[in-house]
Image 1 (cartoon, rainbow, N blue to C red):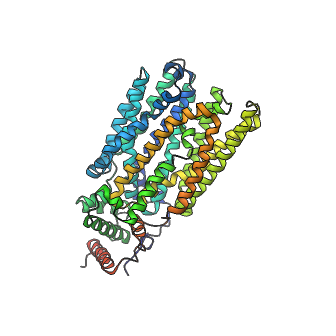
Image 2: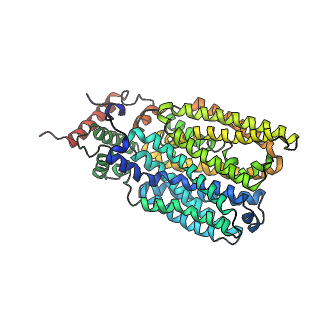
Image 3: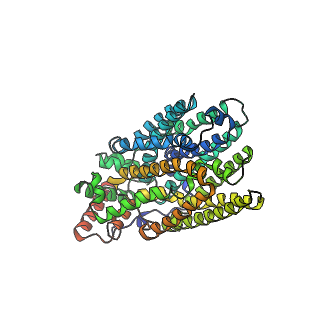
Length: 510
């Protein structure tokens, strides 16, 4: 009987994954993709740290309001600019080369930022960093989702999002260590060390395999088959998993080629694609519009607003928050396939709402007492950490979810839309947050309480569960078909024919 779903062909393993040589090698190589979010996390935490360092404040004449927003948003401006080139780069050059291109651009930007002698030069460096980072951020999730071992794909793409916390830890404690320097190297050194992750990715990209799906789509079927055989089937040419994966890829890509799914208008062609478009765009915004930008880029202002103004205390809180983020992010990433996407999204929004609501109440009461109540101040800081629990509960789920709900030929466009939403949401927050905090202080937190309620409602009513399905099976589900079992008679015949042909390719009759 021909296997119809991925779970039917996954081999039963009796050892840990790292005891399988090919799988271990694959995951080590994928670190070159997983590291993509380190720079993003490093950037936010570094800006938090730099705002706390007196030398940086003096060098750039104590920026505030819209001027501080421009400095912070330099990377977001660069990300927005990269949106015009990301899709053609990914579709024409594959998944590996854009990662290298993005790394080189980022290294140039980091050099400019580190050597900055004025605000304009600092911002230009940040724009280049954002431009290169967007190329990487758009490409790496695609390569991960298309290359990772099927049963590990959700966890690995979830960990990608969690590596931002590793970058945050690096930046938080580096700025804590350099804060005592009495020269401009107190902020130049943290900026220079931002290059580490890009250098690592630039080296790793030369060893990573290309996406099998991109290779098949671009007439490289045999190379794609060899990659899957080596890394997914442990070199077994007769593997059922290998036959099934190749058959699914062949079948799905042929359908998409036949339907000429290459135009941006494809998003509006069917109800399923319109649903996908709504989910992708809304998720890109709502995962950034939940109050996280305040903690990621403006923790200095938030702590000032609750009466915590000591430099060392602020740096320690920033450092502790980043450690929490890494531990929780990695832990929750491993639960994605066990708990499910919807439950993690919804639970995260509930925890963040409770934290923001209590943070608002505690800060409001303490403000009326001129921040003299140490207990309320401690409670407010605790709510910042609890908010981090909720954000890391929902955050790791977004990367696998973006890739899962998109068919192959819209996957590159999905990354562009995701980055568009991310850049748009953060551009708004980057300019509005410092102005709003200056104008109404803690009362601004009420806005994010309302946003979290709105986010919960959108997720509850419009986001389907994709737990336990392959990329192709999710495509079938969203198109209104039971994965692997509810195709019409002609399609079922073609799918079975493709599977039989693939099996015969790997196991010819003597």
